[in-house]
Amino acid sequence: MNMLLLESYLFLVRIDLMMRFRSFESIHRLLRTRKATQCRPGKHLGVELICQSVDLACVLYVKPVLCLQRSAAAVLLLRRYGWEAQMFIGAQLVPFKSHAWVEVDGQVVNDKPYMHEIYSVLDRC
Image (cartoon, rainbow, N blue to C red; front, side):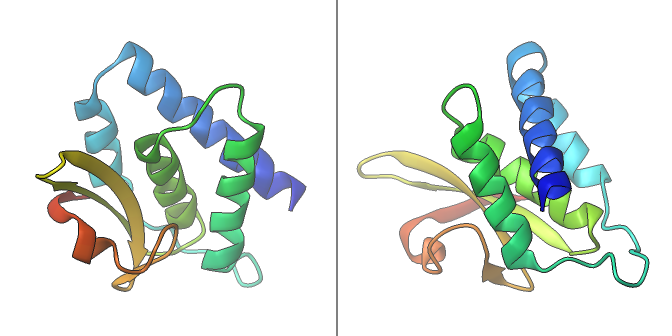
């Protein structure tokens, strides 16, 4: 678990740096090109454990973590451990809000299960 927490934290740092010094397009490109890896037997961790690790890393992070950063880091970590995860970006018009969340096999894994009822999906990667 300690190594998974460290990986989660490092992914948060990576996405934070990309948000600060590059563009959203660079994060989008990274998520579009990074595919799930084939894991060795015994290295396939559960989705819930990975998402809990990202949540804990968010609590320990040096500044508040936004949903985009949290979801991008979760997708990268899930894919590293063989899961076909996708980040969804959605919006609602009145009042205007936007949000990002992660799904695996059509199920929301890092947020409330009814995100599609609240937000219209703008993109997925």
